[in-house]
Length: 89
Image 1 (cartoon, rainbow, N blue to C red):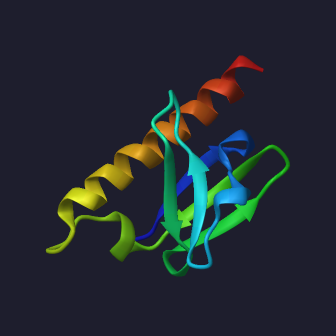
Image 2 (tube, rainbow, N blue to C red):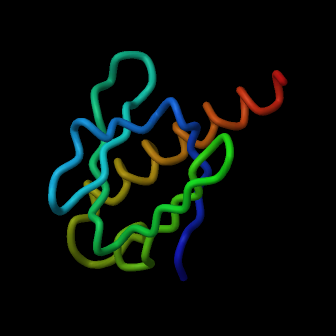
């Protein structure tokens, strides 16, 4: 089942996008996260992005367990940042 996240618009780093991935800036100087375009649907809203990740890309399977766990943590961190900003308004 796909997973839906909400990211703040300030997290998006279009300048670092690649042909095959979208780029988002991680919090607290942790660098950037690239999400595979084939596995990601990106919907732009007024003040945030809805990021929908394919099941095979975000849920733990037999392969790439470490990368998947890191991706889950990074996505959750970006969503937490967005929710914090949203609640402060």
